[in-house]
Length: 337
Image (cartoon, rainbow, N blue to C red):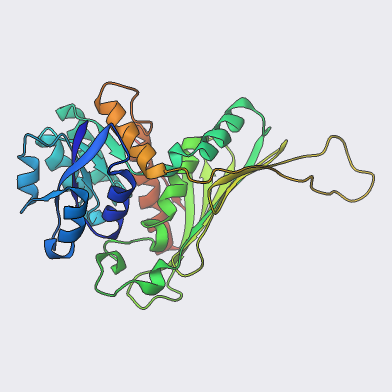
């Protein structure tokens, strides 16, 4: 059993702990630290989590094997380096960091310390995503022409102006830090590296001083195109659609159900029509538990965590290019070594 501490016990930290605690025989949260402990005392008591007075107390505790961080984005790089230096395995919320330089330094610290790193992209573990990846790799979708992603939520309409998530410094690129990075990771996972991005990030409906709606065009290294939109001011929705010469495969809300619409055999006698989609439903899948147990497996000598360091670094480089493109209002090449 991997004894894990949670640092940053806000809304999302509590969400992940609740998805895992008491449901896994591989990992358990035993300790925690947050800036305002009075707000989480009841939650931690209910979950059997001992509150520590400081991050140093967490990192210096020999009875803690790993640390899960749900802290402000600008602190991620420093927190990875501190945990690695203390010999703790690290599970970091997305985005990993806000710029490529800090990401590279954090990854170097992990490699030097010989600890395991997990990054929170739970859709990687979803059976629908696995099915989509399998069909792309097998050629079942034919030649891929384009990928389109969207992820939206109304969270920005209810966010307090005093929240760190409502600041331009912690949430550059509008909805990218909260939402868009998930589909950036998915596109890297499915298709490989991104060469260039062209982004727009706008403030449309929020009361705080940050953008809420971001759209991006991607030029992928493999020659295909892709696009995505993410917004913090509309109804919850998720879609990842892959358009190929043998059909269209989609993951869609509410449960990332898999939809495949094949292309009919041969030309039609009249107008082109779509065949009925083939649908596989996935109700009840716990992606947060799946990602944390994959992290525990990696610590215990099992398969490596399935998001390798080069993809972690490239995802941050793509994120940084998106922020730059939106600010400059022009295409930006993604930095590589």
